[in-house]
Image (tube, rainbow, N blue to C red):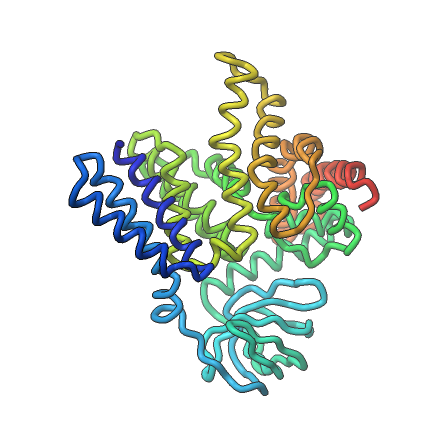
Amino acid sequence: MGRREAFVYSVACFCGGCIIGKFSLVGPIFVIAVIAATFFMLFGGKKSKAYALLSFIFAVGCFYPHFYARVIDIHPVIADGNVEGKITSYPVSVGNSISFSVKSSVAGRVNVIAEKFSDIGYGDTVAMTCSYDRDKLFCRDGSVLIKGCRGLMCRAFGVREAISDALRRELSSSSSALAAGILFGDRSGFTSGFSEKLKASGTSHIVALSGFNITVVVSFFGGLLFLLPHKWRWMGLIAAVMMFVAVVGPSASVVRAAIMGSLSLIGKRSGKILDIKGPISLSAGMMVLWDPSIIVSDAGFILSFCALFGIVFIAPKIKKILFRDKKPNAVGAIIIECVSAEVAATPAILIFFGAGSWFSFIPNAMIIWTVPFAMFASFVCGAISATFGSFIALPFSVMAETALKYETWIIDIFSFGG
């Protein structure tokens, strides 16, 4: 077993142990893992020491969620009533409610789901009437006490708001809502009917920020930074990725994609070709170490890795069976990767949502190639309109509108009345 394979298996054992620990099965399985590690270490040969190490890492994974909950992630229980605090994340619409994090002098940093109230933003100090349940506050009757914020994050979210406002001016309502979803993962502009169509057609992932978005960001800024020396260009690209994460908000899928993208860039800078299994394992391990609950409760994290697993492990096998030593053309490669991602993600979709679309690889194959173009045109349209005005942004608004209308049309066709 090489070092790379050992690392991948170690992360897999740690994550598997965390799953066991989150489901409160740690007792007997933890003891069995420790006994197995001891047995392999004392009585096994040279190869058995690798099994001993993996067993020990699995046992650590079983124990880690309990250690995290008791030592690292302690949430104080507060009485129901008025809560005042500063908003520390970008407010995201969730149906008729709004979700964000607030830092309170009484409760520390907690997650909030509140009734929508007007003119709320990152950095505002708010007052709400809340009831506490585990690590979330369910709030109502919210009001803004102090408006505005300072700092880098405020500027980043200000850029996001400026681009979103410009897109609403330049594009039709349906296209601007889809553009905000593709660029920022913001679904607040979606009608209930369009959200159902996304689910019915199996294309909800196009508004779930992922490594695809990071690829577009790297390609775009790579073109802008081509004049820089090669040894500095990769640092500029990593900075661009980090700024993208700051603007859209550090969700699980975005952080994973950013970590992988940055590792790939560093690998190219060092002259080494990184095996994609390494970055996948490292990003998964880092995120589970940061918060072990995401491995069983965060649908975005799980679906993202399932789809990535399908593309990395299943798609090459299908290509080899169908094409042998030949490479498929671009359309064939897209279809195979979409099918592979669909196959790998279907069990998780059934678990989290109770339904899945078995034909969704068709609309996905018809849409996926237009997403980079729609992202680029929408971003440039919004940025130019916010900076210089509508006239200069007109060519990009036409391109963005065309791509977004095409995507909406495909979603409508394959939603079958959803």
